[in-house]
Image 1 (tube, helix red, strand yellow):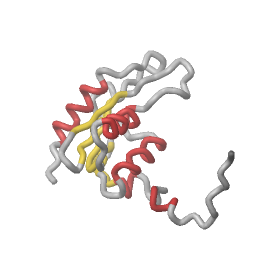
Image 2: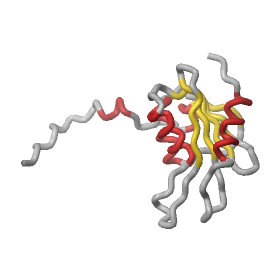
Image 3: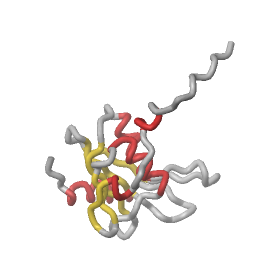
Length: 139
């Protein structure tokens, strides 16, 4: 699949311009290309209690799920200078969950697959390895 990084970055910039960030004043936008060719996007949405804020990447994944799901194949995140910004640790995990090792992320240093952005990632397949029995049901 061909990835139009200019279009993906433009969509991330559009999302960044809609960010709600009155506390940090650090707007971020994210856009992702899905395996079926859709572009999903999101912006950060802060909250006065800080911990309840949403990162742009989480907002983007919410848009992915809302519009039918699928797999992310490419992600671009930008800040107010319209340049690539690295996803935080939590967002790297969220992107990995919906894109896997091969999803390509536009990082400040260039394009990187998630296998390098989040080496040794924990994912859904790791849950299948649990050896503990399911907890008893209550009620």
